[in-house]
Structures are given as structure tokens and as C-alpha cells.
Amino acid sequence: MIFETPLVPGRLIARYKRFLFDAELETGEIITGSCPNTGSMRGLNVPGSRIWMSIHESPTRKYRHVLELVEADGTVVGVNTAMPNRIAAEAIAAGLVPPLAGYSTMRREQKYGRNSRIDLLLVDPARGNAYVEVKNVHFMRQNGLSEFPDTVTARGAKHLEELGDMAEAGHRAVMLFVIQRHDCESFRISGDLDPVYATAFRRALQRGVEAFALKCRVSSREIAASRLIPIDEPGIAALCTDKTISA
View 1 (cartoon, rainbow, N blue to C red):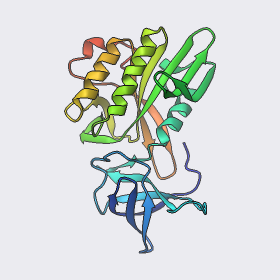
View 2 (view 1 turned 90 degrees about the vertical axis):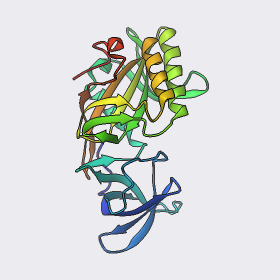
View 3 (view 1 turned 45 degrees about the vertical axis):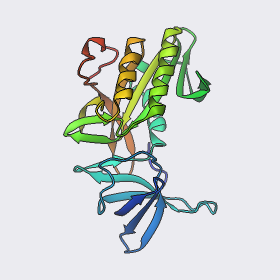
């Protein structure tokens, strides 16, 4: 996923009200921009952090600057939660997620379940349907170990339950965690931050849901899928088959 226009560097002053941030540009100008991430962004809100922003010239936009990347822990991290679906679609089409390769058609934002929409629906006359839910990951507390979620997500638990329904109905159901950083070698569910989600994740696996974690290379030019990494979950190793853990 190549950024359509060059990103503008700056320094983060503050992120607040979930949707807004203040930054200082390299020219010294202070701006207010929009933050396309309503989550906690734990570890990525440090004042003074180097950031990169996209610029939008639409006259209908209140804020021209949109936060895209934050430098943290010696690496560049993507924070725009609108990006993972695009990254996942590109990666699957390019064969970078081997377990999901070979489907004839990919559809986005399809209605399913209990008044929900699935991020990606893979369709093939011979293989049937694969329902793929994509989650954005950028949280890290331990070197090399990415985690999700970084705060409580009742919506995320609901999605897992609906994926389980699809699996039990005979369809393929997949949870794809897209990690917008490259300094990780494994992934796990942060059950201490959201034990309800951790329980829902284990239940989803038991019901037949598959899980994959895809890390990305991130730069001020592009965010590109790199490869699948292992899902490291204490207590559920016996449930993880070759389908759910890839090196």
C-alpha cells in the first residue's frame, strides 16, 4: 500500500479527544489534525514523538493533516485503522497469506451475521466462502511481541462470536491480525487488558475459526505486508494447528 501523496513529517505535541492531535511541522508551524484511530494508541501518544501525516486538500475537510505514522521503540508504526483492510486485500491477492490464496473472487464489506459486515469475503465455486475479519495491531510491550487488543473491545469479541457462527455453519472463518510494524516476531492476545476478548478468541478457535498474524514493513513511502508470524498464546497451543500458526 503506497501512500498516494508524500507524507509530511513533524513532532507530536498531543493527541486528545480521540479524533484530534496537535503537531509541530518542520517549518515550526503548529497544526491541529485528525487522528484516524479511535483506540487508546497505548505507547504511541508520547509528546515529542516523530510523526508523519498525509495532507488532504478537500474543501469539505475541517483538518487538512491526518496522522498516519508514529516513530516508537526505534521503528515506524502505522496508526491509521483504515489501512489494514487495504493491506490485507493486497497481501491476499499477492499470495502473501498462503492459507488464503487461490480464491477466485474477493469482496469487501459484505453483510453477514447479526447485522454486521465482514471485512473481506473470499469466494470460490470449488472451495466455498471464507469470511475474513481484519484487525489492526500496533501495540507492543515486550520486544519482538506484538499484542491485541490495547484496550477493552466489546466489538472485537462480538466479531469473534459471529465468525464462530460462520464456522459452525460450514463456512471458513478467519481472523487476520494485520500488524503495522516490522519489529515483531510473534503475536499474542493481551488477555490481561481484555480478558473477555481473550476468552472469546479461545472459544472462536474451538468453534473452528482460524487465526493468522501478518506483519508489515512500514516507511514514510508505503506500508507493505511482509510475512505471517506465529501466534504465541499460552494455554491454547493445543488448539493451534498448522492452519493457525505460520512462521
